[in-house]
Image (tube, rainbow, N blue to C red):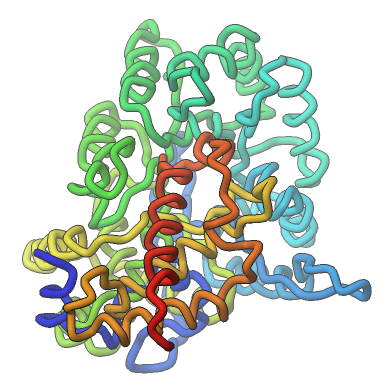
Length: 462
């Protein structure tokens, strides 16, 4: 289906806002959030209760300090953590690289105000930027304990395995990061010593890496502790069958989940909202969901999809605002699993969704900062917004061309300073290697630049 036909049939009023959706502070529900009931829990390998809703600590709320610098707002973080714990959330996921390197420290301050047994910390070995030495990794590992103010970590992950780096394949990068330097052996000994309670990995990208790590798990001798206590994957009702369509290097979630399920490995879910996009659906999809359950937010459907899968231990949500936290608590306190017909409806919505051409950026900002000043997530957000609103047209004979051209160029200058736009990308490729979605960022930047230049060459007045 062509984009113009899609818009003509389904409308644009509540169209997907892609990355911009992450900044939407108001859940799309008919009613204000209700006081939640009892949290739904799943058992980990130790038989301990883990909240089915997990707190993703990548995007804490920010404020401006006395010098005008944007910093994480510790007071708001404390309030969110207190409310989450009070209502049964006990899984908090962070990493050394989150929040411009500040997430672990801020999260540690907020959590350490509560009894250690009341919460579970997940953090990661984020040694993916090029230094593969054991000393670098050990320093990062020790620093996490210091920042999180703890003497043990409940869930420790090999961070973002499967990605390539320059000319190195995903398998070659995995070998350098965790095997050649003895790091995986070190982490397993730390688990034996009790400083790590559960060891796992988060996966993005090359299926060969995923299959290899599970093969190692299968090779553990009978009677020994399994290699992986849990695995974190990207899963939502679009990625279930269409992850490879949105990004050629992604692997469909039904395969990833199925392989983990048949081995009995607990699954942690990241990107249950596809970077916020499933909380801001096109009109036709939103109307179906709202008609089926008028008091429920669009986001709740995506979370219910994840929670319905029995092997899921927890589904992570980056709840920057109290409204998000309250809405998600309403979904998981308690969880109401999807019926078969509801799940089929979501799969039909997903099939329509993949026919809508969007750049699958989740605004994780792993690609930032750009050494040439390009606001990479901002460029993608603007482009996706224009696609969603029908303001993309290359055909001057199209009756909507002039309106679309004007809307695109005017909103571009309002959204991004000139030096932040795609025209300043030189194609160095540094961002591509950092992107967990495996977006060909330089190629997409070039495509967006060429389209923008085409519009600018048209001398028609705006």
